[in-house]
Every structure is written in C-alpha cells, then in structure tokens.
Length: 113
Length: 114
Image (tube, rainbow over the protein chains, first blue to last red):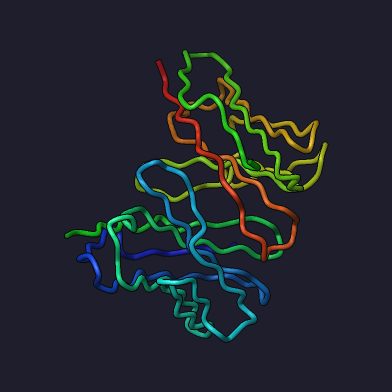
C-alpha cells in the first residue's frame, strides 16, 4: 500500500512572497512518480509539477519548484513570487507501477494582498 | 478542443435510486479513472480502466459500478447500495498505462441526496 501525508491543512502567504507546502509519502516500489495538483475554487484539478523518483534533479516549472528528498520520502512544493491566482487547494499525489494515483488530504493556500 | 466532459454538473438522488454519472474524453487516452472527493479528504479512487471492456476496483468500489464499452466513455453508476453518496465526483484519463504520464481531470459532478 502507498500513502501520502500532507500535514498542513491551511497556509497563508502574502502576494510576491515565497511559500513551501510539505508532503511525505510511503511506498514499497522502487520506481514511482510524484505530482502536485492544484484545485482552485472552480474545483478543476490542474497539474502543477511532476517528479520521477529515479531523477535526482528537482523539477521546476516557472515559479513552482520541488524539493525531492528520496531517502526521507519527502516531496515539498515551493511557490515563488506568490500571486492571487495561486489561491487553491494543493494536493500531493503518488503513483507506482499499478497505475493508481494516491492523493494526500490537501493544503488550502490563501494568497493575501 | 480536446478534453474530458463530465455531466451533469449537479445531480440529485432519491432514496433507493440508481444514478449514472457520465464521463467522455476525446483525448484518445487509454486509461480512465473515477474519484470521489469528500470535504477535508483527498481524492479516493473508486474504479479505473486501462483498456476497453476491462476495469478494476479502486479503494472504495462498494456501492458503485462502471462499464467501459468504448474508449471514449467511462460512466459511473451510483447504486442504492451506496449509503452515503453525497460527494464531488471527478473523472480522469491518462494517455497510457505508464506511471510517468499525468492524469487529466474533468470538471466534476456534485451528487446530493434529496
């Protein structure tokens, strides 16, 4: 069984500041993939960034980057230069060879002026 | 535009009634998924299908049924056996069965009990 834990139910950040969302996971597989999804108030699920476990280099997508610590089974998301449009629920997710995606319980991020 | 279409957006179920949620994709994706989302919880997998005429149970399949007669379509039926069906339901698809491809999601259906 695989599990994903997000220990921060809610976070707040001021516009233009940087925020880091935490995620830890557990899996018995050696080959797996990690994702961060964003769910704005519209409820649509939007892929933010993904990381292959076999790659040591941390993934980056514009203002979004991850800190992937494989030994610690940690996969945090850093959002730089936060914008009002970043306000959303953020879900960390894990998938292995079984094609199933396991989600964490989410972190609600509020970006304020 | 390619995408995933879920309908209806809102659905109401009476006691003892079966209801069917529609999910159609024109992305030519092989795999399709159904998730349930409850407040304060992440998404939980109900059923998934990696190929036409084949599907597997997810973590919370009891009270639900699916079919995959066409590649583009993966309807979910919420049966009367599902005693707590009120939730937000999301359908997703993926281009292949390899894990490095992300899942793409529809806009969801909110199901409520009358």
